[in-house]
Image 1 (cartoon, rainbow, N blue to C red):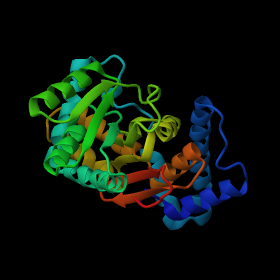
Image 2 (image 1 turned 180 degrees about the horizontal axis):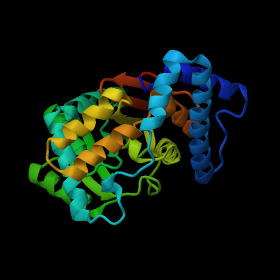
Image 3 (image 1 turned 30 degrees about the horizontal axis):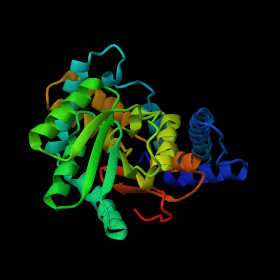
Image 4 (image 1 turned 180 degrees about the vertical axis):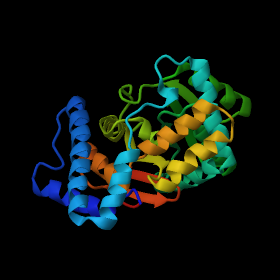
Length: 305
């Protein structure tokens, strides 16, 4: 209901008819500004279109506007200790295991990695951005090892305690994965083509459109095959379901973060706009695999996910 595809498609067409879409940027600062402004313009235009369409279009638009928030999750608070942040991402890790989300993510990513390994006849490499305590990176490395697939996995985050915990688990489980302290908005000067796949999961909504666009654009500079972003599907059902699932662990701040997150999930058309602005192309797909939205941006000339 909150995808508003009919009104959204018309709104996007209206923006294109005005010209200068997608905007051409020259620096990461311009890209960030253009992406933020373009998504804001899109939402304003979608509201106008929804009012014109009325009825079945206007009601979900009003609900969407009521639910939307720019509030930060508690775990993103600058005053929160690293120990408390680790407690919250470990709660998320437990929830992912209970909901069997990691196997779904791993299946998706392995299909891309197997494609590259078969085509290139070499080891393949993955960089995960904002990897938290490392649940997905560890699960991916474990499954690749089980399948005897030559994959090296690097997890990354900006919180030192997450890196420490990820490396501890990798050593304990003897998995081919390492964790590095990396700012996702300012990637190190990796050699060109250092990674085949760049991934970010369950974190897209933590970032503004401009920040996400920067990640995609920088990924294009360091990645041979694709950027994959996985997050919750924007819907009324998840707006209630995510905090409900989070509340099971009995951590009030984690449940509140679940509610905030669900209110911030991007719609498919918003992800589509951000990817197009970041790359200047339409070599990407946005797909729903309930309850997930999956953005796949290809850098190798293909458009299939």
